[in-house]
Length: 65
Image 1 (cartoon, helix red, strand yellow):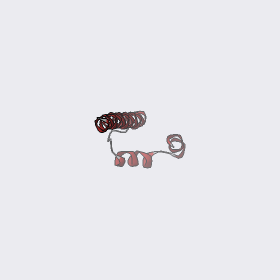
Image 2 (cartoon, rainbow, N blue to C red; image 1 turned 30 degrees about the vertical axis):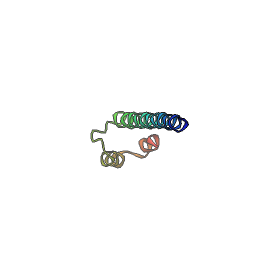
Image 3 (cartoon, rainbow, N blue to C red; image 1 turned 90 degrees about the horizontal axis):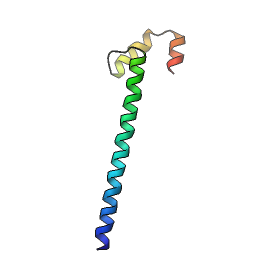
């Protein structure tokens, strides 16, 4: 009986952990998407960001950092 309750508690804890990780990933994705939208980057990849950084002047680059 005690072992079953422990497994249930660990299972619930694992579900909560997965939910927190998924929430954090969604927040990060929204943050990155906001940067792409703010600077008008069409290609949603690291290469698109690198191309945009190469086109920026020093002032815009410092603002991005």
